[in-house]
Amino acid sequence: MATIQPATYHIPMSSNPAELDSLTLPSVVGTSPVMQTVASRVKQVAASRSSVLLVGETGTGKELIAKAIHTFSPRADGPYIRVNCGALSEGLLESELFGHVKGAFTGAVDNKTGRFEAAHTGSIFLDEISSMSAKLQVKLLRVLQEREFERVGESRTIRVDVRVIAATNQHLEEEVDARRFREDLYYRLNVVPIYLPPLRDRHGDIPQLIDYFIARYAKENKKTITGLDAAALQWMINHRWSGNVRELEHTIERAVVLAPGPIVKLDQVMPSTHLGQRRLRTGEQKVVDLASSIKQLVHIGLQTTKSDDKHTLYDHLVGGLEKELIEQVLRECEGVQTKAAARLGINRNTLHKKMQEFGLGEGE
Image (cartoon, rainbow, N blue to C red; front, side):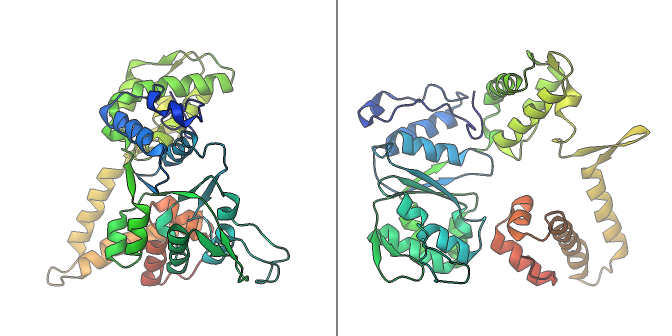
């Protein structure tokens, strides 16, 4: 059983490269073939110094696997540095990665050591790598090729010995084809790819994950929870889990908090995670079926759109819905595009283009 900090693994606390041959990651939560493949690849790549690209949907445990690669590597005694490339603007990310000197820009009141410099002799994990700007892609490529860079505002070259582990939930090949991601950088990062499967592709692992998270959060909340009833377990096994292990973890955490007795019931796991239904309480319980609402919306669109206009239906129905969705999510996220992109599950650059397309303003 694991968490998301430990999403799918318990990592044995060993940093001796000589022990790698004996490590089979026996504490993997789940014995599905796809997870055994991941465990095998982690063991194979750990001893090398090659760049690794972790590919998988949000919530599949990419950060955990990155940390495992570092832990099992000869660099385990060195630093492990994590950077979320999608959480910062270009200027802030450049300073975060490469550092800056005093006076390099407004607000640079002192020298700053960058994350690459701090990760010397260790590993750096670059999450959401696809959101990196073209300018920073060039600088990252140089670090990978030459293992050197300059701080912002300084000409002195700094050399580092750092292993790069990158992660993305995007199809980087498509980003390369669209010229949003450098092809040469892609090949430099994609030396050893590791694909992390979504939870829907390993449903057989769900009961073990449930057991782990129940034990973890029952202990954390000082409650005695022994398991789920049959209906709750069946619902969780059948659920699609678009948020993957992270969604499952949060579902169990909430259920443990809400459960009045030792057995978790269906209504304690279902309300906020069921994507097709949302319960509204107005005296009596009503159910809004999202699928039916979509069908009704399309029906109305077909009835009110002229059949001889090829573009009106899509523009007014699909485009209108997309615009409204983006507007509401931006309001929910107070105009912060990085948060809105994460909420929508799209790349920040994609969100920016959509905002321009719909005339929604610049936001952050």
